[in-house]
Length: 157
Length: 95
Image 1 (spheres, one colour):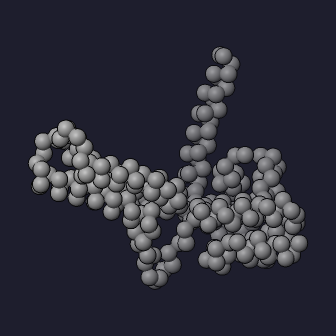
Image 2 (cartoon, rainbow over the protein chains, first blue to last red; image 1 turned 120 degrees about the vertical axis):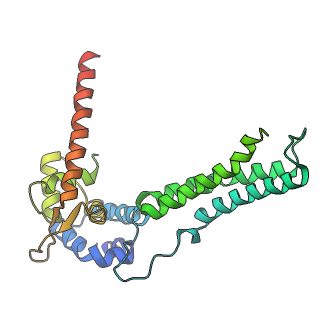
Image 3 (cartoon, rainbow over the protein chains, first blue to last red; image 1 turned 180 degrees about the vertical axis):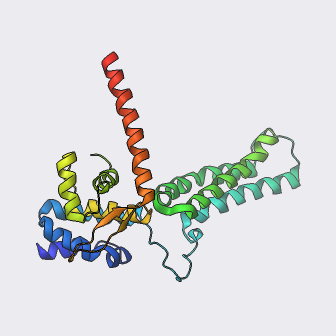
């Protein structure tokens, strides 16, 4: 059982274990180690990994930007790409609606629809426990999406 | 199962407790058996949110207590739950 417990303890993130590991070990000793305890520890470790972020330490370097994650960067780039497609099309062909959908329209649709899974994944992965930084990135996604949608609505395309 | 964070805040409402004391207390007043992983996951979330804080340790066990913000949060949660219970009970009676 001790080996199994050690394996379960090993699933916790290192920063979390440094802070709470000794306390958790004492609690497991007090409450008794059973198989349900091991299962609870495994799920507890997964929950910590998914829901909790390492708190910033005083004097520590600031955390790396969330935009290093593809799910944060891709939607912003795709909205920018969609907006660029509109700008290029407008410069070349003007703002009059076209009878058939051209390359720019298809590109715009692909970029707009393609970013939705990234936006959804970012919200699921980072918003719970991600604090203001994650909220700010989500706000940027929404604003960028709105900016790319606006010309289509404005010109009634 | 009720939200473990609410159970922990309720357990700490009458004073500081360490993990095992919380487990026993919660089992008594709520009939819920929280495992150590669930309990400590919730404790670390509550501490990160500034709702609880470590108190002076007794032996190897680390007790926690409510912060002022934690107490206000618990009061708000209880008021919301009380409203839900009142409305739910009234609607059941009238159904």
